[in-house]
Amino acid sequence: MLRTARSLAREVGLDAVTPGAGAALRLLAAAGNARAVVEIGTGTGVSGVWLLRGMRADGVLTTIDVEVEHQRIARRIFTEAGFVAGRTRIITGRALDVLPRLADGAYDLVFVDAEATGFTACVEAALRLLRPGGVLVLNGTLAGGRIGDPAARDAETVTVRETVKAIRESEHWIPAMLPVGDGLLAAVRC
Image (cartoon, rainbow, N blue to C red; front, side, top):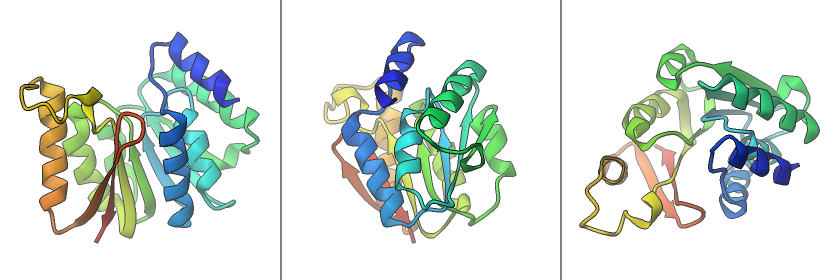
């Protein structure tokens, strides 16, 4: 079923999280005994399945995406993976429009798999959404290998660098870079 979801992601032009990144997401959800998770960027459901596999049996994944077609595929993948409809809350819309409507301090994990240009706003929202001890995970923080290249000055790489630096220097987060997939920055909310 994950193979099918990955294949469908390629068909619609998306990069799904790698198996290593997925395993890290499952681990983080399980370690935090996650009951309420927000995913920004549903895609075809690959990362959602990994998160659901790590969450408590009564946990609910709230997943947000602007693409209705992607969410339709993800809904099918979640069902094929054996998750009942009540385990997922699929919201169509721009994350920055949806996130303000979610409850403060009610989430155990926030996974951001979106354009890097939206990282800053997503990190600010996660700080409000996460309970103390909750975990923020940003995907793509190695910026395709460009993060360590000081000559790389494109908007995406610069945004990723600035976001990572801001989290590292903030008293609100305890971060660690996980070098799996295209890089996961995991940060515990203090």
